[in-house]
Amino acid sequence: MLTRLKEVARTEGLAFGDRKMTYNSRLAQELGKWAEAEGRGQEFHEAVFAAYFADGQNIALPAVLAAAARSAGLPADEALEVVKTRRFKEAVDRDWLRSRQIGVTAVPTFMIDETRLVGAQPYKVLEKFVAEAGAGRRPVA
View (cartoon, rainbow, N blue to C red):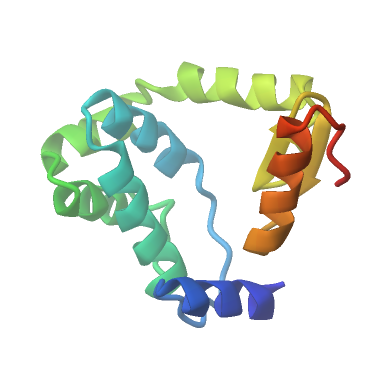
């Protein structure tokens, strides 16, 4: 799986390092909700992606998340407060509940109606998936 992800990242021009550990992303998800509410979600998500996948940093650590927030143009001290108070915990809980309700079991999952396409997919596969749905045919996943 990592070999495929590295290849996709290389093709897309994304940095992807040799990560040795898998870290819990829950606090990053919560802080991501805050960043989205502040209008800096894309920048924050890109910063966390780089910290985790390119630099192998532990995104469960508040200091790492505060640095990502700062690089996304958000105040690091406020980011630390959001993490400390878990202000966006319930919002992420709702997201997780919704994903379970609709049958999402992996990331990424692409959905059109009730049909799912799971995992990072080549562009041609995604294009076919969307075209079949647009033509009124049930996509073949």
